[in-house]
Length: 156
Image 1 (spheres, rainbow, N blue to C red):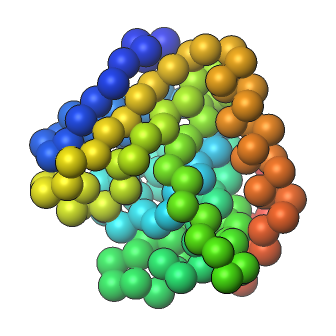
Image 2 (tube, rainbow, N blue to C red):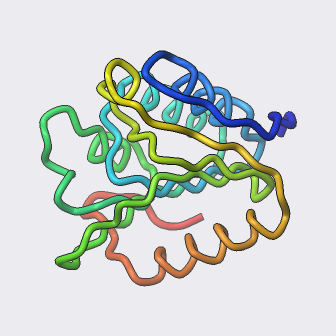
């Protein structure tokens, strides 16, 4: 992966969106995405392009957002991306991505158009090894706990 700088980004505006897209586009091997929802078609398109280019992708998300108007989660699963869902009464409310097990993109930024257009939100990118390891461990723990979305692909 091309080394993205350790940096903070803020919305409204396209800075956070551009950071997400740059992270997705820079992945050389894998993306592990753990987000409450994805409804910004620009992000969905980048994820699907990465998948078509052989990047191994896993998505963790919340069950209550699956059927929201504009949710792209089922489309990702239908296109062969493994998706697991938190089926508990609680919310899987994380918003982070692990790029090639080398960088973390995290923050309050929801992966929606409203976040880019209206909300005051943030993204932080870091390559700090201890932080990356902690996020990888959390992702793997959640992956093992959550249920596979019907129609979703297997694992990588």
